[in-house]
Length: 583
Image (cartoon, rainbow, N blue to C red; front, side, top):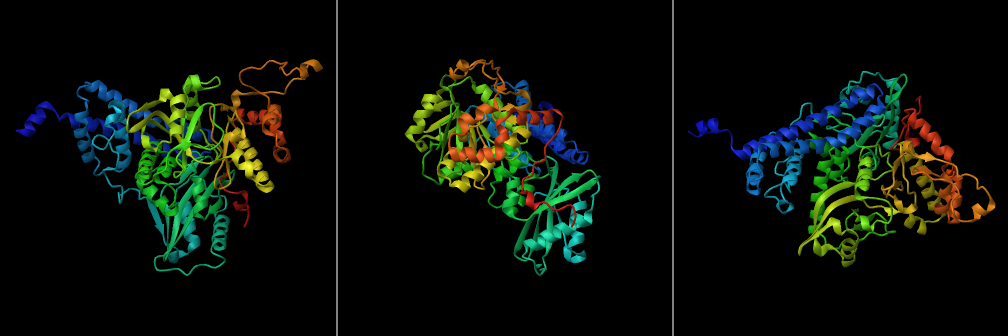
């Protein structure tokens, strides 16, 4: 009788909604995976501009599919039908459909995104959404498998390396695979102190099945296992006109970790079971948060979910308060931090509090630009959140006072919580102005070299930073200078770099008033020295290494290359690690 009624009147409401949600997510991941899979063809054909376009477009996929699913649900069901009590049953139905799913953690996050567009934030707890995961991601089977194993004792290490290089099935042959294998074996031998370890019974090499594509490079990532020792590696494959070649092999966990820096573009990787890739990568980089790994695999929403859970776990097990972030306060953002947690939290100020021609919508657009480009290791990525509820007692009174004064339109409060309507979160760095205040001459010289290199590389990626003050750049723990203030960025190709015209007479030069017209996107590089180079030792270091940045010719030449379609080579490892052309 029950089955007959089900046939006559259709499935229960909760089952219909759960089915729509699963279909929405599956459609999203199919499109996401198709785009990632096509990276192999773009690499083979050296379609570098197509790769950049794919990275830019892929960022939008998730929100587009969420909006589609929300629209379908609202079209098919009334507001009363989508009330709060329905969602508890929908969640149970949804969980049932994830038992044999290949991407259950991503599907849970998709469920949350749709649910949060429909329900009020007071329902953002585990009864209605997945504040913690319901389905384990351990031991999900995958075809093809997450990683492939090779056994060098059977046919030798060189043969295993040849198999690894040929496994992706690239249609472009290697220029000189014997040379590449020789270079790799010599690098591995040096890394092992000049003596090969004695092979143990379990000696094997495990390599993730799919290459990691970014910029003009493919990375084969794996680890060697010998007894109780693990040897992580990343083989770097690039193009010559005459074929593929191995540029280097990275053999240190911290260097491989830099490939996954949040200041770089997201990878393209064809993954059936992304949790398998994240779990493998964590074996190589145990200190890298899972959220950052998901983000760097192009799964930014999952990265945000993991980060949010980590944040609230940390809040549970710590006692310090949010404080105003050290450094010069910005004109567009209010910035605070939790000393025990290595991130900063940025809130756009109300329009009346912004002391220049800028709107919140403009700021959001600029931050979105940064997610859609190759950040070339020089621009910090941001996690963007809406309706973030934080415990009120964890805020220092000074922070609350500043937020109420400058960001009241983005703030909601009750007795227990502070809700921020729009929030950006970034890795904390030492502001460059603070670093320079205490640096000795050698450290200052190196920081200035890094600062100028950051500006050069950003310009080659078609980004002009706009506001180049030291306070807008940070020093990472690896000594790398990274830009993090985006409210004035512009595409290089949209700017007009000019010389300052000669004054018509001495009186005009001495008047303090400009004697020439200035359009909206005119830039005068000669002016940079005025506000950057007031400290003599800083000025001397800058002029030794980067004097050309003060001339329009540098910027115009970079524009010419960009407009001609040239895409620069960027290496996330030192030049001295690159292999020579011949053994």
